[in-house]
Image (cartoon, rainbow, N blue to C red):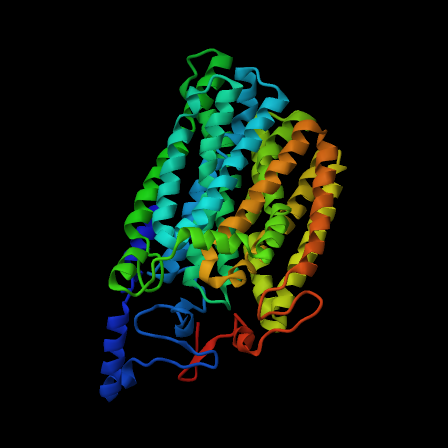
Length: 517
């Protein structure tokens, strides 16, 4: 339904994406026609932004026509179409990535697996993503987010559809390794938004798109575990009890795999890589250089700030990934809840992404508008401290209601923290944003690997306590983040050339004395 609604709205709102020649011709026509100047005017603002007839949003020509505003209810090309395809593609990829998670109790029972074998599969599911995220960053820089997102979804859909063929612990581990490819869609998502939106609002754009995408982790817990799984058991009602459940988990993952294939086709056909058009066409016209994927990756690896944010992201998104793997198991083991009930409780964690990650990015943007980069670093540091403290509180909860309440509170903080991290990433090395997104994003998976090892060998209480303590400790790394041209957390000052980006992102623009919303 969502895909069809995008098609309808997109067909109504689709705007022509101009190339440089067309823009020059338009400007010549405007210079020679006073009538055209009266009817179609470009508005020059204090931050050198313009409203052009070619775009539905205000853009900044100095930032390659990136938009300086976000209108979530719009689906027009290129800016908002790119935004919606980015988050929805990532949403579907997350549904693939964690479709198995709510079924693990049934899989464990059928295959006679131990706790350690189950956690081996959880760890490998995020390990595969680390490797692919390292690679996909420079590939997005080179080939664009449209192609990369489509390929990722197709590559992950096939192993997801084959879930029913596993018959052993090693088989589950191998399967989840390849399904983990889907997690790299995050890099394409963040890169896409960074190409479409200017510095003033990129934190909010990245956070909302990633938040809505990661919400797929909660949605898949509910849809697969609490709705589709009992529905498929009903389809096999003529079989005996245990056999009915076994056949259900062996076939239910075909549904998200099929949806992913459809989504990949739509993105490939209708997606636009940047405001100026798709990368392959820009390169063909000579409007864009053909970057080296290797040089882009090396540039990211050699940047010290990349690794600081890598570690901090590991202590927020790594926590979130671990919760998607652990929550249903935790509430089943500790409180004796059924597969369907535990999956429903686990889905709560993901649903907060609808607003909480976007909230973190928005707060980061507002802090940037008032205090520069120091404001972004303060927000990130504070969120990490609060997150760590609440995870440690959760570790010591022993009542079901209290556990759910505290889990909900730290879910909001964890996800807001994720948004705050990627409010900073586009500033590290703007020319290699794809590589930076891939490397920092891989930090989230690296954190999930470490935390997964804790849960494999330690009790739930011990693992949660260590996880919270590490999040607290990672807040200190903000002291060492220094981005050229920007102030640090404690000392330094922003370069005057960056001052024009310190504006309110919610202040309306005046056009002919009216508020242009």
